[in-house]
Length: 363
Ligand SMILES: O=C(O)CCC(=O)C(=O)O
Ligand SMILES: [Fe+2]
Image (cartoon, rainbow, N blue to C red):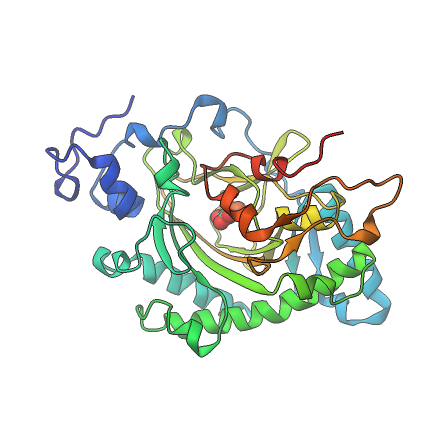
């Protein structure tokens, strides 16, 4: 097993609370301290590692060209492709989404700059309380984990109102400007996507837009790792959101589960990755499936991804849409208030689809 005996000063040997230290300072600080082996508390059980079943290298996750969405003739074809992908995969990539490439690149760049700030700057946003709206943290839910995830994270609300923006990090200098530009573009795209998803479900086109009114923004930072096969950036989970809009950089790492097999989501600098989250699985009465996914890490390269969780307000009641229930399609999930769902989701470590399983009706 790996040992931490030779860690230099940031995590001094006499510090018997290394685990506690890393749970605050994060995995980048650990890597920057010069480790050559990962500590034991990053080593995943063999059955959870990505080593055993290498994902297919071929890109088989659907890639959907969004440009046809504005053309009345091709719109129905794009809507159908989106609906099919949500049913069969719970994930797809979107190209020609309308957000300029330089806006995406600037977002990734400023994400790197944020995590490269001195630790003190990042620590001013530190919290281990997942419900804190603005938060620098590490792993997924360190207060509940015995084995950590190889990731640091910055989270904050995705609203670009002046009151919200002033809660965001002030450093690096271009953080607020780049993130505002990114979120502005992503919001226009999200509204068009929600309309397409609503149409695909056969409900009025503003149906999902009226439910998924909030955006939670996050930057995931996965430093290079001396023993990538022993750990994971994120363990298998589905997202608690309605929809997640993800931008990944050029480093492969995101894998999705479909019919018992893991597939790589091939990095494409021009694409958004769209995940169906648990709330959309419930609303669609199981017609759309939230996708189980995980992230692997890399020996040489640091990976970054930008996530927007499109979510309801906390008090929103989420239940299968009544138009999707009939004699042959009985409700598959009980009604749940979104903040209670999140309470369950945040009360544990990542555990596959256990939160949605807790609201599934048994027959
Ligand atoms: O980094 C990725 O590609 C995925 C991130 C993710 O799954 C999450 O933030 O929930
Ligand atoms: Fe996720």
